[in-house]
Image 1 (tube, rainbow, N blue to C red):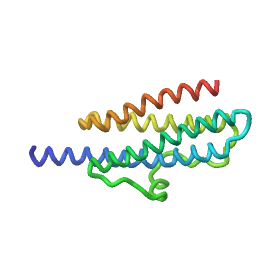
Image 2 (cartoon, rainbow, N blue to C red; image 1 turned 180 degrees about the vertical axis):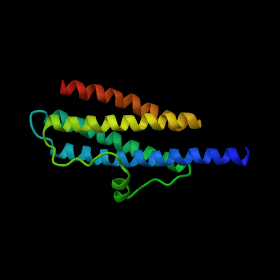
Image 3 (cartoon, rainbow, N blue to C red; image 1 turned 30 degrees about the vertical axis):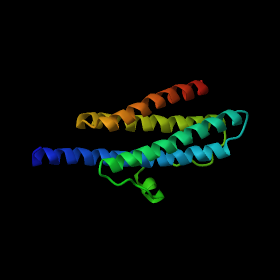
Length: 156
Protein backbone atom coordinates (compact mmCIF):
# COMPACT_ATOMS: atom_id res chain seq x y z
CA UNK A 1 0.00 0.00 0.00
CA UNK A 2 1.40 3.41 -0.87
CA UNK A 3 1.92 6.25 1.63
CA UNK A 4 -1.07 8.22 0.34
CA UNK A 5 -3.41 5.24 0.74
CA UNK A 6 -1.97 4.59 4.21
CA UNK A 7 -2.59 8.22 5.13
CA UNK A 8 -6.21 7.98 3.97
CA UNK A 9 -6.76 4.79 5.95
CA UNK A 10 -5.24 6.40 9.04
CA UNK A 11 -7.55 9.42 8.67
CA UNK A 12 -10.58 7.15 8.34
CA UNK A 13 -9.41 5.12 11.32
CA UNK A 14 -8.89 8.31 13.32
CA UNK A 15 -12.45 9.45 12.59
CA UNK A 16 -13.85 6.04 13.51
CA UNK A 17 -11.85 6.00 16.77
CA UNK A 18 -13.08 9.51 17.59
CA UNK A 19 -16.71 8.51 16.95
CA UNK A 20 -16.25 5.30 18.93
CA UNK A 21 -14.95 7.36 21.86
CA UNK A 22 -18.01 9.61 21.66
CA UNK A 23 -20.22 6.51 21.61
CA UNK A 24 -18.25 5.11 24.55
CA UNK A 25 -18.88 8.34 26.49
CA UNK A 26 -22.57 8.21 25.60
CA UNK A 27 -22.79 4.63 26.83
CA UNK A 28 -21.14 5.57 30.12
CA UNK A 29 -23.75 8.30 30.65
CA UNK A 30 -26.52 5.93 29.54
CA UNK A 31 -25.24 3.28 31.95
CA UNK A 32 -25.25 5.66 34.91
CA UNK A 33 -28.66 7.04 33.95
CA UNK A 34 -30.01 3.49 33.94
CA UNK A 35 -28.43 2.77 37.34
CA UNK A 36 -30.12 5.85 38.77
CA UNK A 37 -33.48 4.86 37.31
CA UNK A 38 -33.05 1.30 38.60
CA UNK A 39 -32.34 2.59 42.12
CA UNK A 40 -34.97 5.32 42.22
CA UNK A 41 -37.98 3.98 40.33
CA UNK A 42 -41.20 3.97 42.36
CA UNK A 43 -44.83 3.12 41.83
CA UNK A 44 -46.90 0.29 40.41
CA UNK A 45 -44.39 -0.51 37.68
CA UNK A 46 -41.51 -0.81 40.15
CA UNK A 47 -40.89 -4.55 39.80
CA UNK A 48 -41.11 -4.53 36.02
CA UNK A 49 -39.00 -1.44 35.41
CA UNK A 50 -36.48 -2.19 38.15
CA UNK A 51 -35.74 -5.47 36.35
CA UNK A 52 -35.75 -3.97 32.84
CA UNK A 53 -33.38 -1.17 33.82
CA UNK A 54 -31.04 -3.73 35.37
CA UNK A 55 -31.03 -5.75 32.14
CA UNK A 56 -30.34 -2.59 30.15
CA UNK A 57 -27.48 -1.37 32.34
CA UNK A 58 -25.87 -4.82 32.31
CA UNK A 59 -26.02 -4.78 28.53
CA UNK A 60 -24.64 -1.23 28.47
CA UNK A 61 -21.70 -2.36 30.62
CA UNK A 62 -20.92 -5.13 28.13
CA UNK A 63 -21.06 -2.65 25.26
CA UNK A 64 -18.80 -0.21 27.11
CA UNK A 65 -16.15 -2.90 27.38
CA UNK A 66 -16.55 -3.97 23.75
CA UNK A 67 -16.33 -0.38 22.49
CA UNK A 68 -13.21 0.35 24.54
CA UNK A 69 -11.56 -2.82 23.28
CA UNK A 70 -12.50 -1.98 19.68
CA UNK A 71 -10.90 1.46 20.08
CA UNK A 72 -7.72 -0.24 21.28
CA UNK A 73 -7.79 -2.70 18.35
CA UNK A 74 -7.91 0.28 15.99
CA UNK A 75 -4.85 1.81 17.64
CA UNK A 76 -6.74 4.41 19.64
CA UNK A 77 -6.99 5.16 23.31
CA UNK A 78 -10.42 4.83 24.95
CA UNK A 79 -11.67 7.63 27.14
CA UNK A 80 -11.71 6.51 30.76
CA UNK A 81 -12.38 9.39 33.13
CA UNK A 82 -15.77 10.67 34.20
CA UNK A 83 -14.72 14.15 33.16
CA UNK A 84 -13.86 12.88 29.67
CA UNK A 85 -17.28 11.25 29.45
CA UNK A 86 -19.09 14.39 30.57
CA UNK A 87 -17.07 16.57 28.19
CA UNK A 88 -17.55 14.25 25.21
CA UNK A 89 -20.99 12.66 25.52
CA UNK A 90 -23.99 13.94 23.62
CA UNK A 91 -26.43 12.31 26.05
CA UNK A 92 -27.68 14.27 29.04
CA UNK A 93 -27.26 13.22 32.64
CA UNK A 94 -30.70 12.35 34.06
CA UNK A 95 -31.57 13.42 37.59
CA UNK A 96 -34.45 12.92 39.98
CA UNK A 97 -36.64 10.68 37.84
CA UNK A 98 -38.62 8.18 39.88
CA UNK A 99 -41.93 7.73 38.06
CA UNK A 100 -42.56 5.17 35.33
CA UNK A 101 -43.51 7.23 32.28
CA UNK A 102 -40.79 9.90 32.63
CA UNK A 103 -38.25 7.13 33.30
CA UNK A 104 -39.25 5.14 30.22
CA UNK A 105 -39.39 8.31 28.11
CA UNK A 106 -35.84 9.22 29.15
CA UNK A 107 -34.53 5.73 28.34
CA UNK A 108 -36.34 5.77 25.00
CA UNK A 109 -34.84 9.17 24.15
CA UNK A 110 -31.34 7.97 25.02
CA UNK A 111 -31.67 4.75 23.03
CA UNK A 112 -32.93 6.67 20.00
CA UNK A 113 -29.91 8.99 20.26
CA UNK A 114 -27.59 5.99 20.56
CA UNK A 115 -29.23 4.39 17.51
CA UNK A 116 -28.68 7.55 15.50
CA UNK A 117 -25.01 7.78 16.51
CA UNK A 118 -24.47 4.06 15.87
CA UNK A 119 -26.10 4.29 12.44
CA UNK A 120 -23.86 7.20 11.42
CA UNK A 121 -20.78 5.37 12.70
CA UNK A 122 -21.94 2.21 10.92
CA UNK A 123 -22.05 4.18 7.67
CA UNK A 124 -18.51 5.51 8.24
CA UNK A 125 -17.21 2.05 9.14
CA UNK A 126 -18.77 0.62 5.99
CA UNK A 127 -17.15 3.31 3.83
CA UNK A 128 -13.79 2.61 5.49
CA UNK A 129 -14.12 -1.15 5.01
CA UNK A 130 -14.08 -1.67 8.79
CA UNK A 131 -16.26 -4.77 8.81
CA UNK A 132 -15.61 -5.58 12.48
CA UNK A 133 -16.86 -2.20 13.74
CA UNK A 134 -19.76 -2.37 11.29
CA UNK A 135 -20.71 -5.85 12.53
CA UNK A 136 -20.54 -4.75 16.16
CA UNK A 137 -22.81 -1.77 15.50
CA UNK A 138 -25.23 -3.75 13.34
CA UNK A 139 -25.86 -6.06 16.29
CA UNK A 140 -26.35 -3.11 18.62
CA UNK A 141 -28.82 -1.49 16.23
CA UNK A 142 -30.90 -4.67 15.92
CA UNK A 143 -31.17 -4.95 19.70
CA UNK A 144 -31.86 -1.24 20.16
CA UNK A 145 -34.57 -1.11 17.51
CA UNK A 146 -36.38 -3.83 19.47
CA UNK A 147 -35.97 -1.78 22.67
CA UNK A 148 -37.46 1.27 20.94
CA UNK A 149 -40.46 -0.79 19.87
CA UNK A 150 -40.93 -2.24 23.36
CA UNK A 151 -40.52 1.08 25.20
CA UNK A 152 -42.85 2.82 22.74
CA UNK A 153 -45.41 0.06 23.27
CA UNK A 154 -45.10 0.48 27.04
CA UNK A 155 -45.89 4.20 26.72
CA UNK A 156 -48.89 3.66 24.37
